[in-house]
Length: 209
Image (cartoon, rainbow, N blue to C red):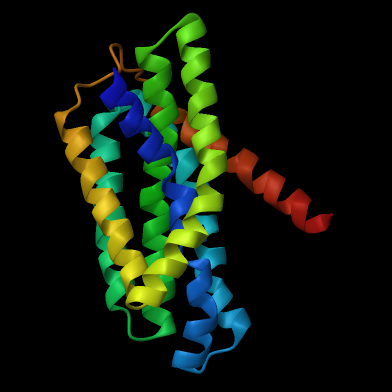
């Protein structure tokens, strides 16, 4: 059980690790690629948009086909995107890679809590949810420090290499994990269009406010 909790914690930490480790790289990319700060910030904005959209996608898909297939696919996307980010030579490639990275990180984040719900019950589930919440809250504090060290020791590209290595570790853990969903739902995937509609309505309301 301890190994599973460690794996779930790593999966839940994917989003903050993917954003906050990268923050110290932004001024360097502005200088290196002679781009405006607003343009380089699109690497963050596009990551979050992709992440939020795919959060709505992975839930229904995992209810229909199980937790492992979309999680394996998502982490695979994440690792590939990290490698592409590390090799990026211009802002266009970086933005595209960050979109893919956001799509992969959404699988890790969504499935971590879904697997916890499948595997644990009662007070144990509540305790593990609290532990995961603490880790997700602590990751944004530790990630910028790790990213800054990586940049000082080597280069901003090392930040994405570290993220790719963490993704590979998570992928190995998922491959060794058994399927947690005992009864797939045939109606799960049908809820995705409704979720997209709700997300669009919230986004329009936020923009209006």
